[in-house]
Length: 338
Figure 1 (cartoon, helix red, strand yellow):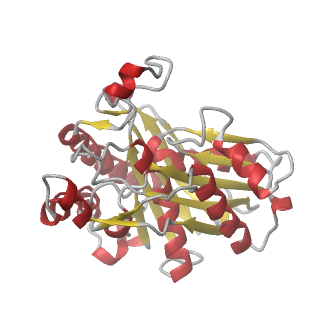
Figure 2: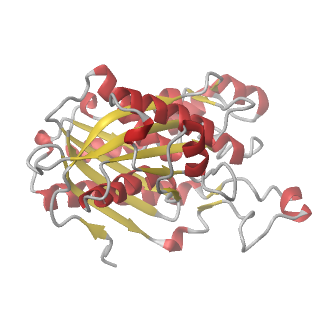
């Protein structure tokens, strides 16, 4: 079946004015799981590439992490909260059912009344949000939009399920996305977004929504935690990532040599390696931090962006490719000229 998702018709004139990230101090390394589950450090490393991940402590939540990352991004942009015209938070672990996590962030930062809302696209959420913010900026009604990816995945992880609990970590990343007048300069040169709802039973949290409200039964049966068919998710993630790489290059009319760096969602090191090999890129042009952070869902891409910007791994004028695949299933890519 052909992918009929949204893709770009022309560049979107935007730039990353500032970036920031937040990682909890608490570290869970693979030895923790060796002590509590029938698994080993070697097994986890070989199948995922993960050595350790971060875990939110008491008092740290999706909103507090998002706020810290957002504050860092605003400071990095040389702006104040008065310069922010909209807040968009990508998350699948919201602060509460209502109001939105973005409203909690707005209150915590002391931002004047502006649009503030959440977007749910799982691991693709930050790229979805980035593209939506870029379109908002094209209207001319907004100048600077705060785009945040924040997830406390350990709060929806069953630490008795060795297939999933080894994968996830907590974090937040943020950018201030600003409008630019010239699409020949900084821009989203190309993007793709799509979804396939038939993956709903392969990676999901069964209870807590309107389909299966919370009850003694759902709690007793541990239905408020992530459930995953790891083998099938892996197969689909590899397939969609490779399709994203191929179609993005073809539609954008560029060669892999023109890409300074690829920042993929950090789901599994083997999935990342498959994309790198398809592009024919050396390892230093494919960003990874899964070894230290695990899968942080919507925070994954902005974490990588901030680290690479702050360390000089990417710089003004570079072409950077962002790619992600997440529950739903959703997938997205953004080819950015910095």
